[in-house]
Image 1 (cartoon, rainbow, N blue to C red):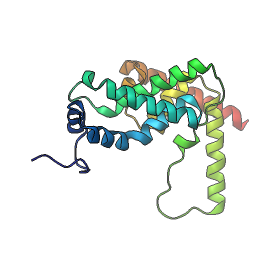
Image 2 (tube, rainbow, N blue to C red; image 1 turned 90 degrees about the horizontal axis):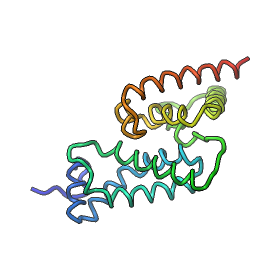
Image 3 (cartoon, one colour; image 1 turned 90 degrees about the vertical axis):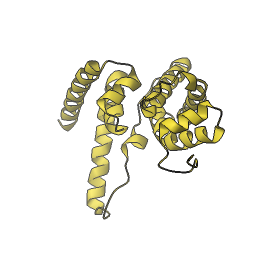
Image 4 (cartoon, one colour; image 1 turned 180 degrees about the vertical axis):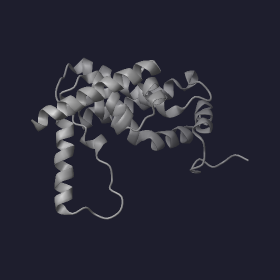
Length: 190
C-alpha cells in the first residue's frame, strides 16, 4: 500500500524516491519538513534574513536538481544542510560582506512550562546577548562549528557532513572553539 504524502510517518527516503520519480508533491513535503532548519543554517552564515531566505530557496532548487546523486539510505537532513551552508557561503563571498553574526534567530527557543518572572527573563536576555557578543568575536570557522552543534542541534557526525570536515576534525575544532568562547566570556566579565 502506498502511503499518502501528508502522512507524517512517511520516511524521508520514501519521499526522496518518489521525488526522484517526478512526484512534485513528495519534494514539496521534504521542503516543508526542512525549510526551518535550512533557513536557520543559511542565516547563521549569511547574517541576513533576506539573504538566508534566498540562499535557502536556492539550496532547495539545487538539492532537487541533485536528487539523482543522493545516496539511498543516507540521512537527508545533513545533506540538505550542507547544500544550504555552501550556498550561503557562496552568496556571502560573492557579496563580499563582512559583519557581526547575529545568532538570535537560531539561539532563541520557545520556552517550555511556566513563564519566567520578569527578572529571570531579563537575566536570560542579558546572558543571551553576552553569549552572542562573545560568539561574534570568534572566527567564522569557530562560529559555524558551535552553531551547527548547539544552535542547529546537529550531532557531531551531521556537523561533519554539513561542514565537510572529518569527524575527528569536528571534535577537535569544537573543543578549541568552545575553549575560545569560554575565554571570550571570561574577558567580558572582567
